[in-house]
Image 1 (cartoon, rainbow, N blue to C red):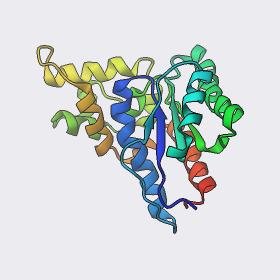
Image 2 (cartoon, rainbow, N blue to C red):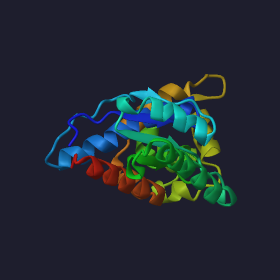
Image 3 (cartoon, rainbow, N blue to C red):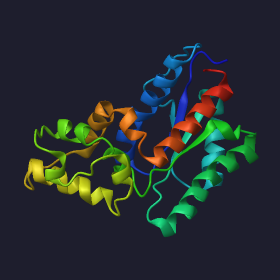
Image 4 (cartoon, helix red, strand yellow):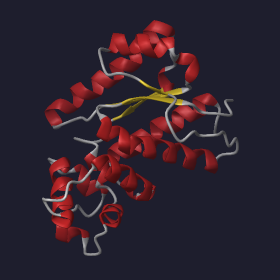
Length: 215
């Protein structure tokens, strides 16, 4: 059993990092608190990998593998036509690590929200309105009712942008790298669980922590 669960990440971009760097430790912390082993979950990743080919990332990850116990690989799935391909690409990173240095597959966790990260960001509309300082009904600024509805959006990024503009105005610049972590901190995980893709992600995290003997 590990008493300290260091984690590494590979994200699509910096805005994704702003969100997942808050969400990932929250998810793990809730799981270990419900268990009996109570390992320490650090609030920041131990290693950030540079996006590149699966072979390049695997080489970088294997060289640094003593520094972390779990690795999270993020890929937006895009539309339905892209979903299978993007999911396979993310899995390819895990397989490449396994091939190169026998990294355990259960400890390589794919983050694959339906379409885009914003589908999860919109999962709890109350967290969005609270972050934006908006006291009206979420539906009045075009927000989906819940996580399942957010997953059905064809363009969640556009929906979130429209809501931000509606509240803050077009002339007021908004730094999403500040907005995203604030939403991630406020989100209720039980609301996120209404998204099928988040349920899959949580299942993978739970299996990884079990594989480490942390639950």
